Length: 246
Image (cartoon, rainbow, N blue to C red; front, top):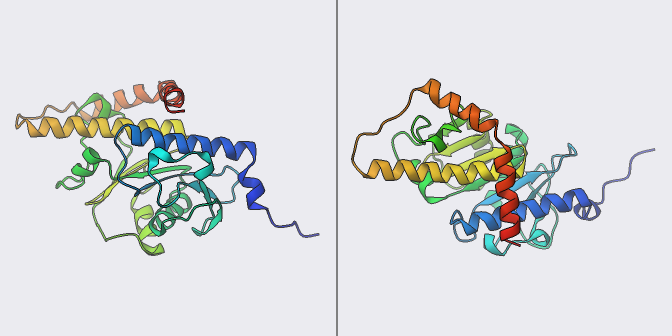
């Protein structure tokens, strides 16, 4: 006998999915709290761990600071909304559906946060992971998409961005913004927050006009490995934000 189709509304309210919705909403409010949002633009998403290709996404038209679990929507692998009471922005469906599907990332955080985005406007397009200690955590984890191609208003642009990531956790999108990915929301959010801090430090150092003093790539990799071994810091930070931004 054929298996009956899944009831997406029932799935949407399961305890495990409800926890993902809460974490996603918290990440959005936390990003707004730290000045990483841009109007009602940009999106965060997290894939359901059931292998269905479905994912959760913030809706269209809400400021990140006002998003709570009940505002989150569910999307399928093709970018079509399955559950939730709000509409979804087309660019979000195209970019996030492609990254989840092609790049195989569970959490996808896309922002136009100011310091990271400012570096996408430079010739190098990205942060130098041999400079600040914060930047070293990303050594060997970056990709750069140099070919800005306008708004992602069709599936082909989302696929192009996802392919350009080449499996990297972080991608600097030339003339556009950044994408930060991870397997868990607490890890992904911590990477997003620290990336903006690292970019801020680099921009401030560059603006001084003084020569920059990078470390060797070997040392940068060593520091990155050290930070990766202390991931409990990411969880503690995220839980502190949960207490702060109830």
